[in-house]
Length: 178
Ligand SMILES: O=P(O)(O)OC[C@H]1O[C@H](OP(=O)(O)OP(=O)(O)O)[C@H](O)[C@@H]1O
Ligand code: HPA
Image (tube, rainbow, N blue to C red; front, side):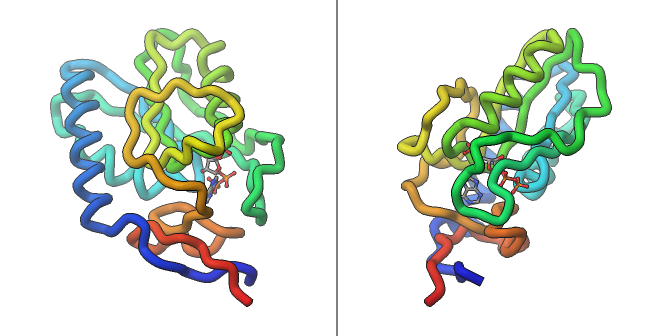
């Protein structure tokens, strides 16, 4: 394997606190409303499960899943976003929040936003845990952001290198292995 687990960038405690904060904002904004939360597989799955448990009874939260891939077994985007599994819900006229683990070049989220906007939801917002702002090549309008992070390849809390390390409870820097 070319990468190994490096230092912790964001600890379990910091993640927990941030998820609570984001959850509280979304809960306040959508109180009494139905929202379809779209989990972008696979990376967002852990963040999604934690975030959705913050909605409480105030929000009529429903789940759906979208599987895409652009990084494959690399640390560099292939530049091509592939939809591997589409939503199973009709989002026409619904409030939709896309939940993603990381915003890097912006390619994935700009592609997904365009795709879902064409289906005429009532509202469409993005919630992203990590934002690697300096890497952006495609503009993306994000309403809920967790952490701005430096330009380092990160792993853990759902994020992988070639399918590895998603299960780590903290976010780590991926370190090149000799
Ligand atoms: O802003 P971008 O440069 O497009 O990068 C962000 C995307 O890259 C990762 O997905 P990946 O293709 O690695 O699939 P995965 O979620 O299954 O790990 C991540 O989950 C985002 O979807
Ligand atoms: O830093 C990253 N780590 C894991 N997956 C990613 N996809 C885009 N950037 C990253």
